[in-house]
Image 1 (cartoon, helix red, strand yellow):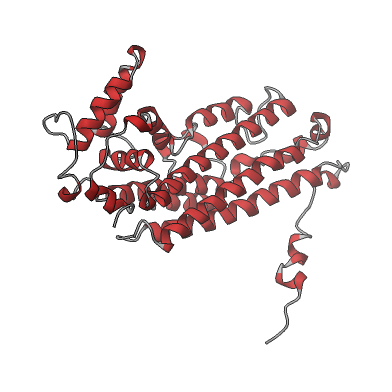
Image 2 (cartoon, one colour):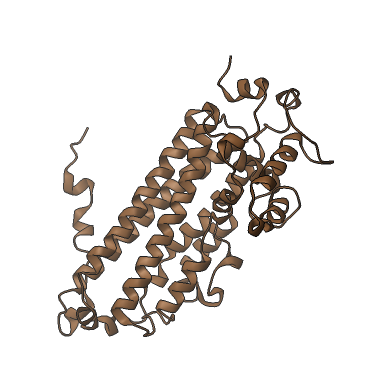
Length: 341
């Protein structure tokens, strides 16, 4: 077997000779090298994020998956890695901010119309996670500045099953409420017609825990968990996700809870990255138009507000009640969840 050399293995000849500042064609601007390297590093991390999300999607596509299995552990681990990478992306802005507004102006006009808005990898990442076209801000021009082959890749990603859709299918498969033996000895105070005995009891206890100013939460609860509301997560998926949050202390629910929590972490880090990016842009160019023709800070602010991918999972915390008020599960259900033998 031929020996492998560090620089050849990493193709450092290509990577270290891939920086060509535009300013060197006219009057060299020192900070342009930093600007290039940071954005190249971003794109490398985007590539790794796509690699991880694709691998998670392949596992989640399985029609059956044990919720205490090595596969689910792998999913949680790789999503955790995505969260850590996103934290690095946020931290890189600290390096970028060592470039002052005047430093940036030395070469900014030479970049037009190049812009981070043209990052097709980031658009693919958003699509693969679950951001749909109709939920995007600035639909009319979000791919208008991409090359055709980049548009084709983004469109292909949008047509595939997103991670959010796969999570919805996984939650729908959870059998807790379909197995009658789990509930035959479940203690409840009342039953509402048409409701599963658990949700009838839980709804009653939730209602008792709400203050007068929170009563609208009960209407929202009915829409999300009991009616055919048009949402990214189905009623049954929302019920399974809330049940996981409520009873996450049971062994079989710990990995599913970690999975849901990692999705919220990903959304939080993406939001933090967008906020830091917006703040940096405002600090650097004020209210000027971005090099790619966007409205700069205003565009980034609107994207920040609208581009939450797993917001429906985050919203479930509105319907949590205190542990001491949770319905007591039957012995059969506790055995199902792993505490009893």
